[in-house]
Image (cartoon, rainbow, N blue to C red; front, side, top):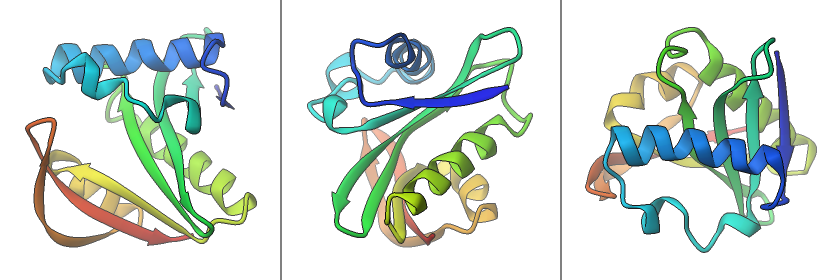
Length: 144
């Protein structure tokens, strides 16, 4: 098991992240491609978790917002690997990376179905429900 990250949108790591995102968000959830792959791709740090057979099974990306604030986005675990702690592992890795880079707060938009997951990881729900890609979300934050 290993987690790697890249800013290079031409790398195999990034392409593996996109494959997972296309499968989870576009095929499973019906998110349009022009929303899923957006203008922020090159500004983000993309993380991929590989299993022991070097199969890409989870991903997320980080979008730096302000000096101390970074946003976790596009967290996805491939079907068949969910419920096995891989999501927590990749988020923890992204949090540690962010902390090492000097960020002290992480924010994210959580789908309603993922609220409990993020709450167990210490994120706090803020504000009202909103729609993103026609899916109900809540803004959440955590001090790192």
